[in-house]
Amino acid sequence: MVDTTLAPNAMAVPRPVRPTVTGEDWLVRLCLLLLGLYLVLTLVLPLYTLLAKSLQDKEGQFVGLANFARYFADPAMLQSFGNTIFVSAIGTAITLLMAFLYAYALTRTCMKGRGLFRAIALIPLLAPSLLPGLALVYLFGNQGIFKSLLFGHEIYGPIGIVMGEVFFAFPHALIILVTALSVADARLYEAAESLRARPARIFMTVTLPGCRYGLVSAGLVVFTLIFTDFGVPKVIGGSYNVLATDVYRQVIGQFNFQMGAVVGLLLLLPAVLSFAVDRIIQRKQVALLSARAVPLQPKPRVLIDRLFFCLVAAMAGFLLLVLGMALFGSLVKLWPYNLSLTLKWYDFARAGTDGWGPYFNSLRMAALVAVIGTAIIFCGAYLVEKTRGAGRLRALLHLLAMIPLAVPGIVLGLSYIFFFNAPNNPLNFIYGTMTVLVVNTICHFYTVGHLTAITALKQVDNEFESVAASLKVPLYRTFWRVTVPVCLPAILDISVYLFVNAMTTVSAVVFLYSADTKLMSINAINTDDAGNTASACAMGMTIVATSAVLKGLHSLIMRRVERRTQAWRKR
Image (cartoon, rainbow, N blue to C red):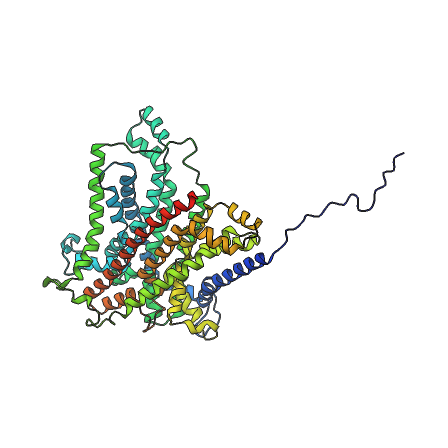
């Protein structure tokens, strides 16, 4: 017989060999922990403090939901909530309709001047949200040019808020809808035409279903922007209160921080809901272009092209009229009695508006945000996307990086008051300094920069890191010599995005500035409150001009970078 007796360890299952954790791996994990600590300190803890403040009384004692009950028992405060819903819904409907027609003309017609019209539509991105409100005062105010067109109604209230918000939110919706309408399979349209379907039926059964996710996403983004905006209702809202101005009034006017926290949380809920719905919808979205798809090329249609040219020209004219009126208002001597042109309103030193100090503060803050923010965001995205190990930690950091997209600026600014101004906080010393403005602004606009960096990093083959590891090349050297040059266009995009938004931001920093760190956008609001609308317009146009110059320089630099990147890839 064959002896089948086996040694005790003969049938033992071999243990999996764990990869050796090198010093470089420990360094990466340390950097991930530092990034997590940064996001916790600048985002999670301030929001937690805001929540805690809403559940306390003025003495700091826990009172549960008593503050919320008191809010909903106050008819005036409850009316503000209804007002916010109303103007947000009306503004979203108008903005979506205009943006869809504009995007359809840019992507599905052969009308002339599409490049020019696209550039005009993006101009509002360069302006602070208060600027359209100032322009509408000159257009439809008590002494406005077109006051009679309102048929006895006042611009100060829901009409002015809706018009100003349409100007402010229009480019955001357009960018999304242009992307959605640019993706189409020509075979679907050819099949519909072969079945002799009418253009209206093709539009309802092919075009709209193909871009429905873009429409929903654009609607959610616009609704959230209008719901949480502070600049437009502050300038032209008059006695028509909305939640954003309620927060400002409760904190600055009445020093009622607990009720301000309650309103801030109510302002946060719709943004979070919109963000969650958008994420759910994106999961259900399917690819519209398969490998066999044929990209749709619009065909010339004389009548349709002319019709859309007229529509787009009218909408572009509205955008230019608002911006042009703000410029004209900043140049006239005394509206409406002396319309001769002057530059005296740009002499901020003589106008009693703190001189040029706020402008240089804005430049300084924007530059710091662009440099420091880009470094933090891109390095953080690299750690999340390209490093190995610590999978759960990297997933958590990616989730934290997505949260700022759902947090309104005024809510973030309010939470920074409660967190950084707390006497027992070791970081209390940065409150009222330029540092807290920089940290707040980076956090406010973190998500878009993070997504931009992640998208760029996904296009870089992971083989670079694998080969570098096999050759024992340090990770930081691969990052600096390979990843950064390839992703340089995205890095520049992130820096310009941060700079422009830092120049135009209002709501996120309205609670955080001091006498030494007042920004130009904040100074414009204070100047308008003092009755000097012309000087406020001059400040707004100065911000627009600065942002436009930077965008122009960015375009020139991008051309050179793209040439160098292409040459590098050919090596």
